[in-house]
Image (cartoon, rainbow, N blue to C red; front, top):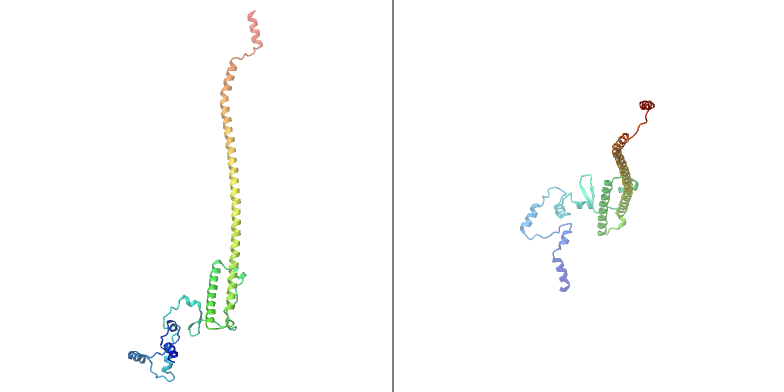
Amino acid sequence: MFRTLQPVVLRTLRPLSLRARTLATHAADLPSTSLEGAVKDEADAPVDSTPGVSTDSWKAERRQRPHLGIKVDENHGLWAFFRRKEEPNEKVTYEAFEAIDVAKDGSGRSWTAAELRRKSFKDLHTLWYVLLRERNLLATQVEDARRHNVHASMLSAYDNVRKCRKSMARIKYVINERRLAYEAKIKLYEQQREEAIIAAQEKEEAEKREAEAQAEAQAQEELAAQRGEASDPQSAARLAGAGLFETTPESPQSQSDSHGKES
């Protein structure tokens, strides 16, 4: 009998593990062993002067510790994994998972390709990361629902995940269209650039051949001019030498004079 009771007694006397104390939502009523702690608890307890407000309810509210008394940064990035709700009394709450509510469902629809084609690259990339964040939030809701044994048919997360995936697939499709159009334009530009380079080279070669032809013609003209200048003195000397030895025919008068002298 003692053997059967021993594990039970040990289990009741064993202190709670760190995980059990961390996941606890209410503090346990542990007996105070020190007089100082008892006096402090009595001093902290409010005076039950208001009718309808009991000290027991205040203690229960005081024992409740959803965040284990740890101060958390309200702007922490992990809050983005939960749906932020602002109530009319300016109280901010975060929902672990959302049930299907057709009347209050404001999720909308997925983006169409025609709408995305009118967006810039910056808008498409911003929208991509917004949808990625929404998918992370919905995945967190699905995991929380699984841990709480909530059936998937009661959640609106699966339908919203499908819309997010369709929008992201269309964003990739539109960006791929722009990439293909850009590559086609680059290919056309390279082709036109090569044609322009070939035309410029042909034009440069034609101008070079024309300049060479003009230079050759000018050189031939200068050579001909030099040859002409060199032949002019020679022709003048030849004419002068020919003039010295030439015999001019005598006139009839000079012949008659010469006959008269002889007679």
